[in-house]
Amino acid sequence: MKIFRSFFKLHQSGILAFVLCSIVFVLIFSLYDLPVGAVLYSAVLSAVICLALFLASFIRYCKRCRMLQKMQQEITVTIQHLPQPQDCKEKAYQELLKRLFQKQQEQAQAWQVRCSDMMEYYTAWTHQMKTPIAAMQLHLQAKHSPENRALLDDLQRIEQYVEMVLCYLRLDSDFTDYLFAKYDLDNIVRQAVRRFSSQFIHRKIRLEYEPLNCEVLTDEKWLLFVLEQVLSNALKYTPSGGTISIFLESPKTLCIRDTGIGIAAEDLPRIFEKGFTGCNGRTDKKASGIGLYLCRRICRNLNHTITAQSQTDQGTTIRIGMFRESRMIE
Image 1 (tube, rainbow, N blue to C red):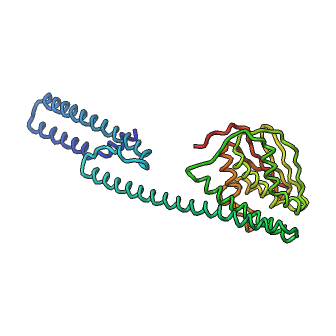
Image 2: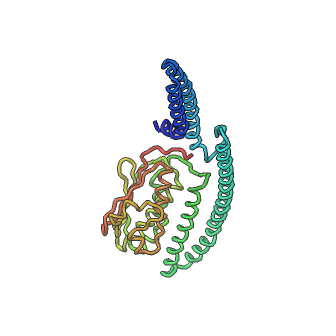
Image 3: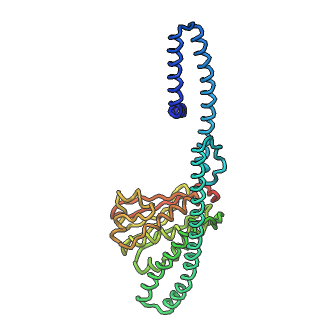
């Protein structure tokens, strides 16, 4: 019906001209007192011819509309299937469209080259940063003192931020290095806990953890990154003397619970959004709003789930569900 209305509107001038001509013929036939049969015969014959032409034109119009609707899905890739122009005006529009498409392709290629160069630069930068970070860690570990321990904690956060940059770049890359296999979940959790062991000790935060005895299908490196981000947030917002618990819920859902400051109810639905920091982030002034966003992106790629439950001043629980079969990343 929508196509018919647009076709009728496009040809309304021709239909109006046909009606006016018919009125003129009727007036002329009546003035010359021609037989009614002749008038009706000529009117019916003209109407049949015009109706046939109208239907043929309408069918062609429908085909062109369907072809153009299909082109809407392909216009970002190709314009080879454009219909043949019927007049000079359509030809001019198609030439304009071809020029715009060519310009868009040139800009897309230039932007792709620019993004590729930028990714190569930042990837090289992150790898180069790891060398001085490792050297500084060795120097600080050579002498045990409260100052060195504090510097080691700060250096660990710098290393985590560098790895976050590398992870962010890899997520938007055309190539992924996901390696799905069966892994012992306890082994991955222990790696994450071991990395923050000094912070647990120095800040006197108690860790409640018992062997999970669970095997999951995942990618060890990417899941480890998610666990480190969650543990880092738990340590950041848990005061000294608090508790962080790691346990397993059925089915294959890893839970990390802290007794920290919690998350405001109005912020909870948005904590996995890119750049969102909420009330805690505005208080901390150093939150980037990227960590949990990356966790959600990674979990989605691993076909895992990640959710949060929290109450202000009572702590937060992050649940990572690994009960679904991981899918291959396209």
